[in-house]
Image (cartoon, rainbow, N blue to C red; front, side, top):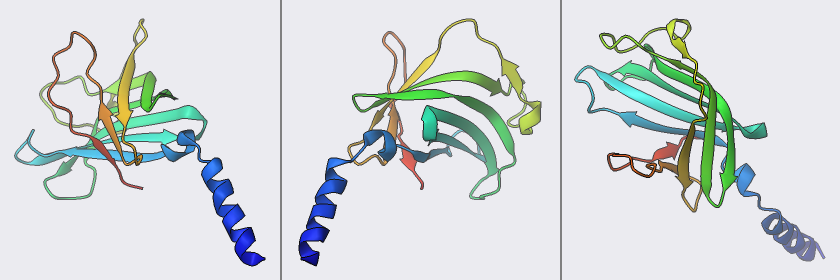
Length: 149
């Protein structure tokens, strides 16, 4: 009897699999080739309620402590056929080209008067997000964000 209950419970979990829940989490990639002294850690966090936060921080090579920010974005996302479509509604960026990072409160808010979306394909196992280059854009081969939680 208990074996029957366990097998029914397992089947119910499979039937209730929700891709919208499966993509929730923190995804990260680290750019190490941009600077001889710094690593730039880029994070996308997909949260409950279709909220998203993205940020880029600088760290000394090989270290884990964030020194400061290059950007910080907040917005919403939706999942469409294994593609995460992100609309950043609040964007804060480093605008001085002569420095590599600043504290979060020193980032400049960027006000856009147009709609802006980023698109990322989702791997089958929900462990990677890969930027999709827009049509008519020149993009480097993408390095995926890997899930870290």
